[in-house]
Length: 194
Image (tube, rainbow, N blue to C red):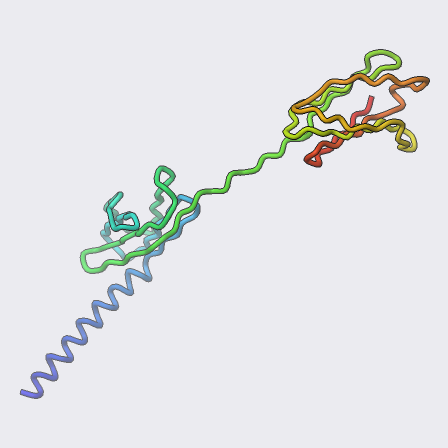
């Protein structure tokens, strides 16, 4: 009787060990990763028929699909339409089940920096017209400098919102001998040659 009990106990341990190994096999043959609000489920050859389920953090099933894995396969999920947060991905076969927890997050918006938009034009032999547009903050430092040597002839700060137009009259200086050096409140610069 003692021997029969020992065999029964050994058989029970062997089956539980086999079940644990099967679960470890599915864990070894699958992986899940998230980048921003995209989730990729990788299933390797050897899994066979499986179900993939996406659940929210409360366990509510959001999506389920069946796959037949004959070769390595990646199953992508786009969760852009769902709020960023924690999700569970359950992969199950007839004998095994593995649950992965992934965290999705929104992509940080790209900061677009536009160049300083400024234009210069010769009006006549003594006048330069300057137009600056698209300012997000008021304040542009304007310098008129000599082409040769870079000597500053005139400088001022123009504190206009959004943009401005201004004429500069040069006395006894050819406008083609000077250039404009501009810098706005955001640190963007522009040099205008004539």
